[in-house]
Image 1 (cartoon, rainbow, N blue to C red):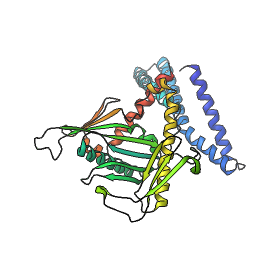
Image 2: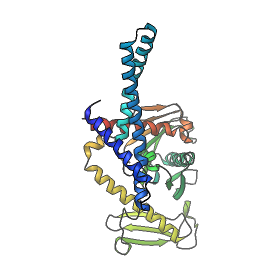
Image 3: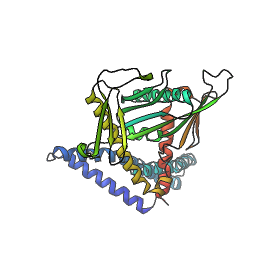
Image 4: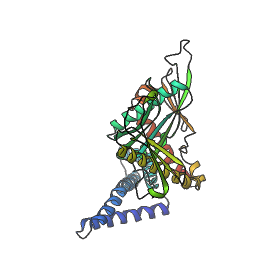
Length: 360
């Protein structure tokens, strides 16, 4: 291992010890304690990896000394086998530590706004969009996240033109951020008499949820708020009061409509939440465009126009085109059960790509 990396490990070990000592003291205020506790908890897995790596290095050194000193052929053979096993294990442990040292996306711990829209394909696209939305809802349930419906525009046959939800929980954005893009489906629609396979698409956007402190909005100057009567599929009235809210952000022209709640106040609060997320995402995109070279090293750009995944029902497979991953378990993916396999693979590939860029 190179000296620079060893020096970095020593710095982290010292910092971990300093944090441990500070947290054991009784003179910390509430905010300072919370800040140091967060740093300590984030650093602890890294320290565990460093200590595991160093133990393995020490064990290999001891086994190598035994190989040189042993007179007993059987003992010598056992030591040689241990040296070989540790030599094969060390690169994996070193890679694990290097990956843990990569800076995390500052938004990974945030909650998220999920938006799903039907794309090309008519009714079939709307049906698929509805299935995707329910897939994420089930996945959220499996991970213990809170899934709050924000808005849905249904087609009346079980599909949705568009739907959005707020998802709250641990590492929501970190797990879902790779889902942004075009999802393509290939299957025979129920209305297709000839049995011909159709290709349709739906667009998914996952936005990190912004706090008030992230995005400053002057409601009196920046927003135009219109209220109107909500309506359901086909135009029939679902409300007899002007509870639906349309918010226009004048500086950017962004428009958010919210009509799922019967309360105008609740619709306005939800619309503002979505607006802040979209404004924050706009800022993220502008920051990322300034780091174009870095974006090329990542798995997918999060661009909603990028085709990221194909769901082929006749063959029972799901293929993620960014990492050439294919799973023949489409039913379990659609119920959310196997979605972690896709997310884990995308996360690993992205971190490996960033590590390769960092070492250039």
